[in-house]
Image 1 (tube, rainbow, N blue to C red):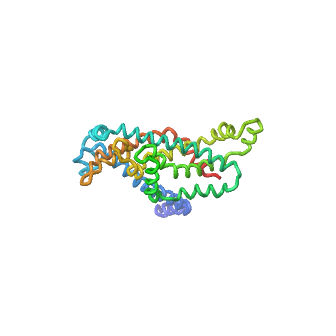
Image 2: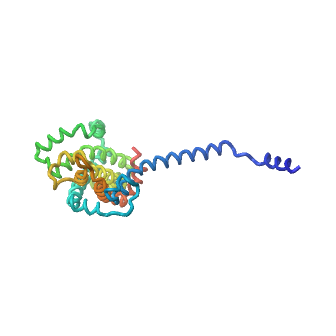
Image 3: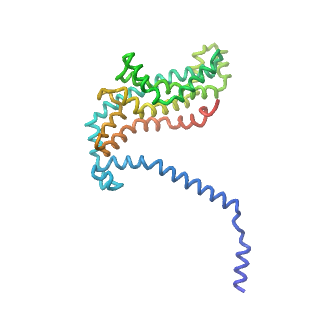
Length: 292
């Protein structure tokens, strides 16, 4: 009698619907896959941070250091003259971002709000410039900078980044200005504002998310660039941070502790920029940058 009662209870208990089971199983599979991808992406950064605090003898002997060793940071900071190279990178990045912002905001506004002959063709030329790999223009750019006397100068290095930086930034800012209502400009012109005042006081403040996006993307690109910086700059005192840290890589041996410590110090300024502008950056990626 008891067995029949238990069997009746089991039969009366509602079964889990197949759709709900498939839903939970699918979500679990997605989260597991994303977690695995995230772990693979984060592992190099974790290894860099851990190695920066290791004694040179422990680099490949254990994953975690036996004790925190700050000698790598001291050695890199003093031996490689890291403050000077940080200033060089700061100058190149600031100059490149400033020129890019000035050109991209004005050009993006013109492409979005004006109609003139050849506008679309000129805009497609900007898009085509984004598709040219930087490796293909390395030698022509070297010869060009040498002819105008800007080879082995920080200003020349900054100018070498402007081609791709301005092209991408114009494309991005045009998308922001297209997404803004044109009635705002019409109202400003009815109040007597000129075209530049309309751009400066009406449209540009509304496109601050796009400006922040350009600043973050171009700052990261220029700050982390290595190929042009290592090719166009030969004077040791003018090296940017990335090419200076590369000096820890020797022909026959590599000081991995010093290399990781230098890379950590090189990452800090760009991380600070991202933390300051991250809200505008996320808003830019999810709003105007996806319109138009």
